[in-house]
Image 1 (tube, rainbow, N blue to C red):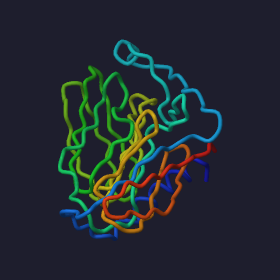
Image 2: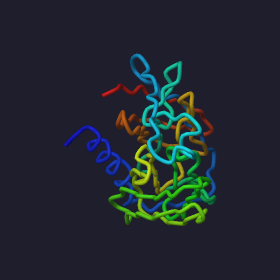
Image 3: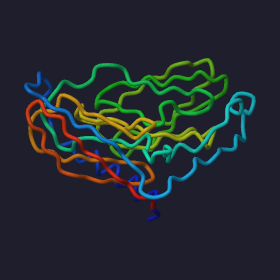
Length: 237
């Protein structure tokens, strides 16, 4: 089993184990917050450029880099997912529609956060044929063609899981869907920062996951109306 397979297997276990929890959403009294940074340990690697080999008139207009590991100048890791594991009661689940856009032959965002049960709008702005191929284990995998005239596809994901999504027509198009059973999750921004809000007072397992760097956990205690600082450092493999 190679390193990438191990990371994907860990992703399934990381989110999938929360499937047994029945989450109850409602008002949170005296909630607190958890915020921090996810940093890369060591010298930040440079983003690798991607060679566009197909549909260059559309896909090759803008330069592209491999987004599987993006580290800022100060060491912040972008697109890491931070979440609480096993929480069964708290603020309501998000109600908006998650959107994956295909623009300039790349997935935007690279990591899409999806509340369990939500229907995702899969859009395309590109005048080329794409397809959406998911590599899920707990959710039914899909492999749907999306020609340029079909601007939006819809698909629902019901089971908590992290899984890869690819375009078979353009091999460099790669991203991740994160399906969660509770609303306490976030993806880090370009500086590696995140925040979880309206967390009920209690002790929790806080998890960070990144597609190349794997998973790390720590225990955090949230007091009433408190702001907890929780940073992570992830090492390259």
